[in-house]
Length: 532
Image (cartoon, rainbow, N blue to C red):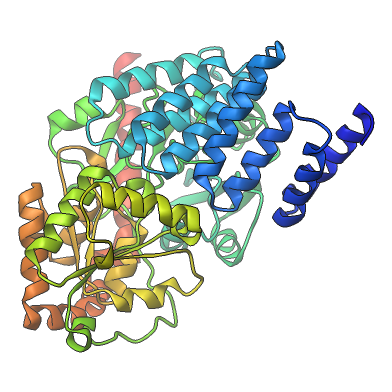
């Protein structure tokens, strides 16, 4: 390549290959360009994207630091590119379980990002990352909430109104109306809604559909894809549809549309299901929870800007997949050793939790720990975790790391006892383990997000498997693992327990949700009458 035009054309070709997920071709093209140009921040950022998608987080971080150095040396202040690099640093730190560092990087990205829409995304990402920090205080969360809400200040809400329809119009807003945990958890609710009392609208902010999308669409009265609409356009559509109650299901997870709620397109606005903690927004009236997750009133006041809806049973409903493999015998019976396992997202595994698991392995001689996540699918990811385990004093021969696999549900048959994460507990992974007959031991605290496992186990009738302290967590896990008769009984009966519990009772779940909707609707009406 002899001139800048050729370099730019080659970069665009490499970028297109990356977008098409042809990572090998993209990497080769980048190397060819490097022979002609050394200081090219956009090319370095593209290399970081390729490393990320190849499961190489350490290489990604090194490239991102190089990108920032190149930007500084270039003398050009490209704040958009710098913010993108810092955002990726935050995401990579989050993947590696370095939560505090992730929050700092994402916050910095929000501070320097010149585009307001993207600035909001970065501020929201920082809030989500904080869910995994055990030592992150309510005051620190409130500071993140204030910054995020300040970014929504330019939005002017639509005129207030209260319309009266024959049926309450309920809208569900999400980017995850597909084979995502949120979409799967929404299916039983939509399919059991009482259509004589409720008219259901779905606002799909995702770009791809699948079989779950089709099922949700069939259950809705009205379906609108808003993925190409701006926040204001989406809000105007919801406003024009005269929605009475709007539920935004992503909260601060990826692809959320919280800014839509700042326009106040619906009379009552609710968040929940997709995230474990408050939206932090004054425009959100309620957060969906249950009597087990909600905790005490003081914790709710400290942690939530919304009022909690305390459903009487569970605030999510699990549908056991068809064609689940048969329950296997307890693996330790044939292997001669206990296998503890965790298939939760690796971002939820803190050093404090790993230290606890190391102590558990000490208390249960000859036991093993099985960890599974996409991070461990690459050599670099495995090496990072192995070095982390070594630093914490683990015997590496007692820990197995597995990467992503399509048939992961079968791999639950390789564990005797599942260990929940803390402070950010599992959701769908907990349901999957129980459906495969594997008992789950969970720890809970005062914070709402720590109590998902507790809620699931209480609804299952096995609340004794949830622990309020680290020591009790260890005691329960060790006791279950070393009681062969109890272990065999649980493995044999858990799937039936799950099928008979409120956790899979779609009719009861829908009735509970509907009763809550009518209650908050009437409360809102009473409040408006008192203020007139």
